[in-house]
Length: 427
Image (cartoon, rainbow, N blue to C red):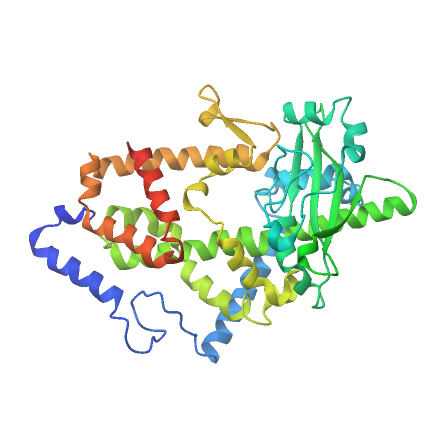
């Protein structure tokens, strides 16, 4: 049975209301692993046989996933054929391709100013603008000047500078050693990207307010210069891998969705159509997040042992979360914000991609469009008018809790802006 609160049969109404009260709890007492309610107070899963079993199960699943990725299975015919050249991964072409079709294809963006500028506060961090100059790249732009390449949307950047620099001095006091990096790429006539320069930066030894100490590396194939170029690419790739694990994956997937899971279970009855719509997408999220806090993102856990921010990983993700905006997470909005797509009513899905060969965006928009059509049809079946949305007491409580408690540290401004944007979308 699925129905809005106002359409609940009379005899069931009090049971529906009581169930939500029971699931919300009263905020008192010690939470136990067998309790069936949702709240925002974290609790530690007791160590012992249960946790050990969870650890073994988790690691076994990881191993099975690796086997599926590397072994033979029924879907292997759909995968791109790998090169027989064992050193193909070292090529500039593959290095650039992975920014569009690798593990973190969500960060590359169109370069819209040159040299690249930093958004870090100059009062605190000094001059953090890029030291890449036109002399580094202009002779390799197929005859275009910097300004023409910008105008024709032929320059792109993978920027790990602003995220890393505020934490880099402390990160490099650990066993981890890395650089903040910027990688500038050029779109060739054949539709592929070619890296033009990689900038590696460290904090100034005399203090943050003195800016960054940077060095720019350009492509080379042979000798010492060729080896140094390979190392520069390795640092940029390591930064991208770490960004994927800590920010794209943990923060922007697992962490930010958890308040939605909690609010849905606390404020939307199991009879509510939006609960039924969201529930399959939340499957196992709370379980895996709880387990992650025990063996992945905990102090001394897998993330701190393997990802470059080391013991500053969670602090770094918390800082980056300050810039997280709900209404910018939709795939079309994200592509537009990064300059990777433009609105075009004549193009598929209403967007024209700047790069034709961008598998993440091409495939993602197909999936996004299918989900969007399904969700619109589904919601329109239950909500015939905007007034029905406004008068849905459970839905309004759900949205209020997300704004004021789930993502409460953003309630001063961001969520009200989000509400305004969402209302404009509805209108």
